[in-house]
Amino acid sequence: MARSLQRRRGELAEFLRTRRERLSPADLGLPSGGRRRTPGLRREEVAALAGVGLTWYTWLEQGREIGVSSAFLDNLARVLRLDAAERRHLYLLAHARPPVEPGRTWCQIPPLVGRLMHDLAPHPAYVLNLRWDVLAHNAPADAAFGFGAQPPARRNLLWMLFADPCMRERIVDWERQAPEMLSSFRRDYARATHDADTQALVAELERIAPDFKAWWRRHEVHAPCSGVRRLRLDGAAVAFEHTTLTIDEERHLRLVVYARAAADSPENAQQG
Image 1: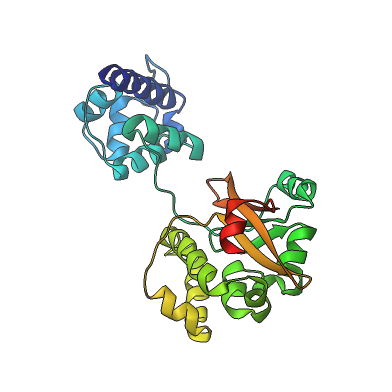
Image 2: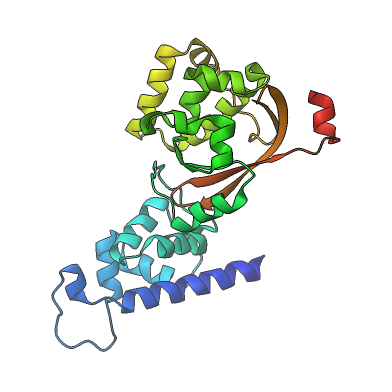
């Protein structure tokens, strides 16, 4: 463990040095100060711009064992002009954990994901963002959930779950499934509490859906939804196994895939 920490501090020192040396004073609006013996910014310039003392920053760049706050790392990332991937790497080297990213309700998906969903047919598949907007879906998912019948502004899984009578009818054992799905949404909500669109969605559902309002105010959080879900399709109850795959962690995009459960699976036996 001690050797691992020492190696990580050494990598942090090298990372900071290389990122400092790739910048010029002019990049940050500083005077060049004449001829420099080393490329890039001086340590004292980085320290001043990041709001720390020269000795403290020097120790950090030398790989010494000192603690750093998230606020300082964010300042340092700004000073060194780090992109998102470099900022994440800085956090992993300094804290051994990635930074907490602010929740964003991203509304675009890569074209490759669209092709992947098409290729997943006959398995229903759709993409959700942090607000649970259904950003894209394949034809089997439309047949299973009726996404296409909703106008784009209402193509939101949470809204459909509590405000669309057709969705309530499609999900067998809705009274048990809906609270579990809501608890999964609560984890996403905790990451997007400052997102105005997410707040507006919750406020609207509290106003128009009594079940949502009652369950939402219980603040229950269960394990992530997975396993078997039974849907009414063409008048019959069909059991599907489902899982969620992260396709873009930074933008909080997930691919949800359903596959018909085997007729003799234990889950079917329990819920049949």
